[in-house]
Image: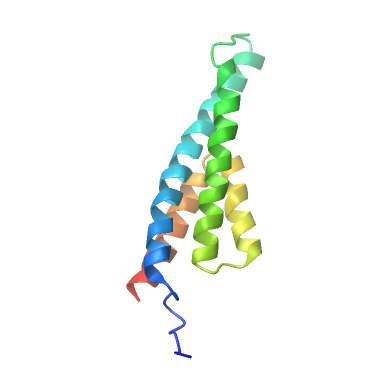
Length: 114
């Protein structure tokens, strides 16, 4: 069995391929969550406007795709289950998905360069 350096990945190409969908979905879900917050403000705020009432279901579907992309990256990068779950949960807090996406991308890119 070959010794793999601790800084790199067992299969860097798989990790690289999994990183792009994660980055895209983290951005989409982050923007989608902000639209969902806007929808809730419009609906329950003083405006009582349902113009974005249709957005909740597509956002939920996009979040499920984000969960799959996160799980795919996490398993490719051999993250512990706790880290996968934490990154998944970042998609439910406004603006947090943007920060976590940058942090994860920086970490993974750094290990891919090693």
